[in-house]
Image 1 (cartoon, rainbow, N blue to C red):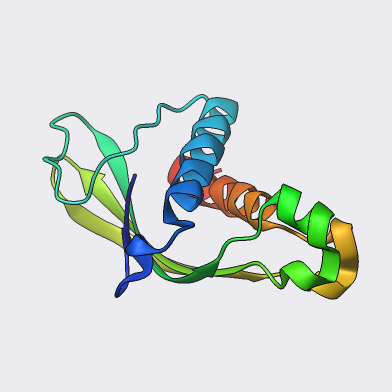
Image 2 (tube, helix red, strand yellow):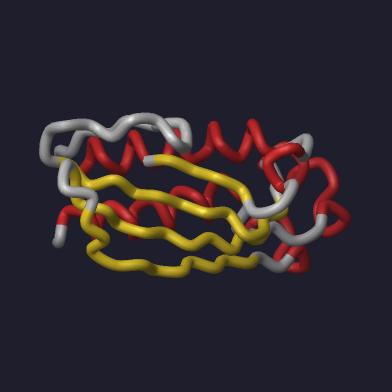
Length: 134
């Protein structure tokens, strides 16, 4: 998987935490499906063995951690993300499809609202279901 950000999103204070959520959630989801997982930097040379590259572009996101939600409640605001994913068959480099994922939470749901980690976990499972074809 490689993740890039639209515009200057990748320079915000929560970008590293957002990437860490993806690393953790995708690794866990891949393990559940019995698949391997590697996080790659954009532009890194693709592998020469058969694999599926998940190329993600983050168009927008608002990171809300569990600690922030529990501590500030409705004042923490809404967690959301808008990402575009392309599935590329390697080593040929053939695009096998694109999909857009959008999530949003409502701070008014209080501490039970889906924070960024829960949203990333749910989307990770959907992505790996697409990759695994099951």
